[in-house]
Length: 171
Image 1 (cartoon, one colour):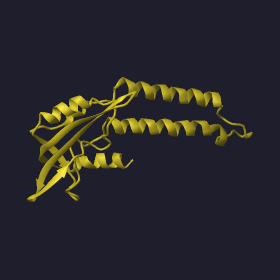
Image 2 (cartoon, rainbow, N blue to C red; image 1 turned 135 degrees about the vertical axis):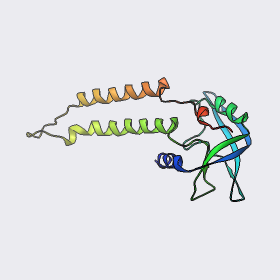
Image 3 (cartoon, rainbow, N blue to C red; image 1 turned 120 degrees about the horizontal axis):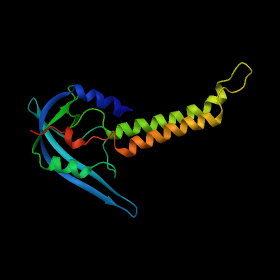
Image 4 (tube, rainbow, N blue to C red; image 1 turned 90 degrees about the vertical axis):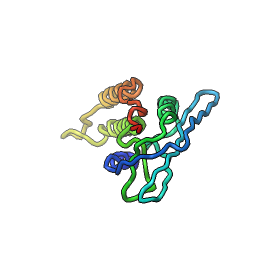
């Protein structure tokens, strides 16, 4: 959950220009899947001191879900971009602040698992006046099934997926 806190905190960091120093699209293939990850290095100056950064956004890592090619193309064709720098720790910077798809996915996943354990524990702890469970496992399974179906529809539809490349501010 540190990423969730940091990503929201980064919205209030100072915006400064940075130069894209190096950009690469790292591709890993095994028998079953191919994963992609954009590797970027950018430089920026604060009070005459040069810093290097490589964080695109909090929670970013290689996967086969994101559109890494579009992100790579956007950064490859950009010489100068705006970044967000932590005013209390100048070596900490990020290109895109705010909540992004990987963090939303993690939150949905966490809600699903909390719901799973919470709903299935209801019959154990919530009793009526005769000490009988107020909820049956059948009802809790239906509620959990509904939460599961809605979560997977939201994740797989891409409804919450916003092209991260569109959030990059190119100068």
